[in-house]
Amino acid sequence: MPRRHKRWLTTLLLSVTGCAGPFPQTTLAPKSDFGIAIDQLFTNIFWWAVAVFVVVEGLLLYAIIRFRARPGAPPPKATHGHTALEIGWTLAPAVILVFIAVPTIQTIFRTSGQAPDGAMQVEVIGHQWWWEFRYPDLGVVTANELHLPVGRPVALAMTSADVIHSYWAPGLGGKRDVILGRTSRLAFTADSIGTYYGQCAEFCGESHANMRLRVVVDSASAFDAWVAREQAGPAPIAPGSVEEKGRAVFARSACIACHTMEDVPAARAVIGPNLTHVGARSMIGSEMVENRPDHLAQWIANSAAMKPGSKMPPMVLPPEDLTALVAYLRSRQ
Ligand code: CUA
Image (cartoon, rainbow, N blue to C red; front, side):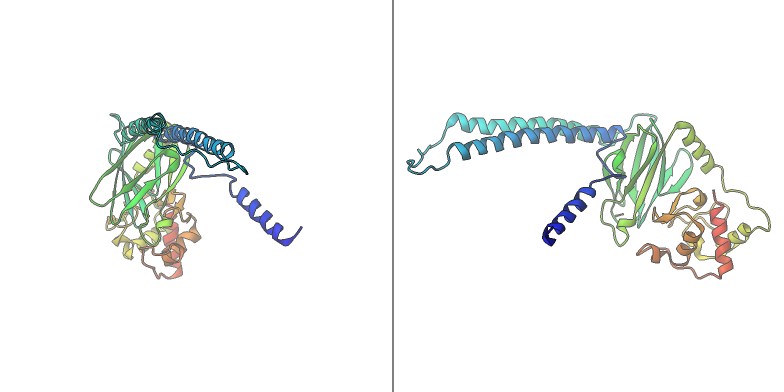
């Protein structure tokens, strides 16, 4: 095979295999009422577009073939206006636009963020570059992992602590800008248990691409168990343990200037994520890396090396203090 052909074949193969799944952030497999409403609207308009395409291209091809220039044929007859045709091609697009506009406007109202009574309230706060989730009725505050019960309406009230971000978990529906000083609302009911990935969808600075989130949709009982664990307060610490030493390191370090940690009275700051149950989260750094002791140690030593622009300053600690601090954080289940 000539080299040029080989290159084409490789490009083609790469393009085709690029279409293989899985697609953790697809919008085409909606798992909430909100997502289904958007999907139906998309499908509806897609078929209108297909119909328009087929009619217009069909007429074009017909005209090109039927009326093409033939040798020896006289010049075509000039036509000056055709009232019926002109009314027809003005009315037809207007009617099509009505068929597109009516369901579009209906969907805009259906997805405007009005939640039914009894919906679970969650406050979402976008930060450079992580997500804070507060459950005011449950007294739970967490970061980057939004836990929801399946089948129950949820009302998200969203704002920003700094610049404009945009909340988007595509599998569960629409995208909303989150803006300092304003509240954006999003309401939906998740219909399938699973983990749905999302990310910030508005450029917000250096680590915009690393401002990820996950939504964990659980059965009612698994969700209640998660809430109970979050509400249970800090996990106990054995006297004289390495975790106790780690807590002392935390309490005398810069950690307390930015984080809340329930069993460290001086740590009540809300600049960074609440760490009371950080050990229970599966990832750190807003879904940057798995929550493992080595990653935690690297993160504490120099988070900006893992996540460009990270606002957490590097911490220089003696190795045994760092190990104790990591053990303490890991025990915060
Ligand atoms: Cu936050 Cu982009």
